[in-house]
Image (tube, rainbow, N blue to C red; front, side, top):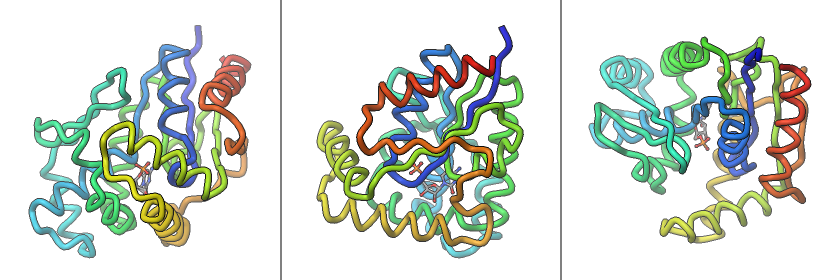
Amino acid sequence: MNKINIAIDGPAGAGKSTVAKTVASLLQYVYIDTGAMYRALAWVALNSNTDIQDDSRLSALLHNTSIELKPSSIGNRVFVNQEEVTEMIRSNEVTAAVSDVSAHAGVREQMVKKQQKLAEGKGAVLDGRDIGTTVLPKAELKIYLMASVEERAKRRHIENINKGRDADLQMIMDDIQSRDQKDANREISPLIKAADAIEIDTTKLSAEQVAKRIQDLAEERI
Ligand code: C5P
C-alpha cells in the first residue's frame, strides 16, 4: 500500500498532538511532534543560560545538541543528548520561552531540515505550525485544526491535571493567547493555514472523531 505524509498544523491546544498520535496509530504511521523539538531546544537553552533572543548562539547550541524523538504509547519520548526530557519540556518555564526560541531564522532552518529528514520515507504524521507551508509543502494531506481559545485552555487544563502538572486555567489561557500571537506574527514561517489545507474546527468534536475524519481523508489518498 502507498504511504503518504500527513501535515497537521494549528494553534496551541487545538488537539494536534492527541489527534496526530491517534491517526498515526490507526494508519501504523510514525508520529513526529515537531513542537517537542523546539521545546527541547528551549529546555537546553534555559539550562545552559543561553540568551533566547540570540539566534546565532541558539543555532550553535542546536548544532551541538542531539535531539531525538522515540515513539511510545504516550506520544513521543524526547531525549536531549541521550537524557530523557519528555516531562521537563512541558514546564511553565519552557512553555513561556519556546515561542521566542522558535522565532529565529537559523533555528528554524536547522529544525526544518531535521524534520524533513524524519519524514523522507513517507508514512509520517507531523504536527506543528509550519508543516503544511514549509516543512512538507508537498504533503499529500494537510489538516489545519482549530478550536475556540476557551475550549483549548479547558482541554490543556484537564490534560495538565491528569498528568500532575501545574494547572491554573487563567495562566493557561494567557499562555495560549501569548504563544498564538507570537507564532502567528513572527516573520519566518508564521502559523498560517496552508492554502490547500483542510480546516477542521475541533471545538465540538472529540479527539477520536477528528482522528477518524483524518483517517478517512488519508485513506482516500493512499
Ligand atoms: O506544539 P507545541 O505547542 O508543543 O509547540 C511549542 C512551540 O513550538 C509553539 O508555540 C511554537 O512556538 C513552536 N513550534 C513552531 N513550529 C512548529 C512546531 C512548534 O514554531 N512546527
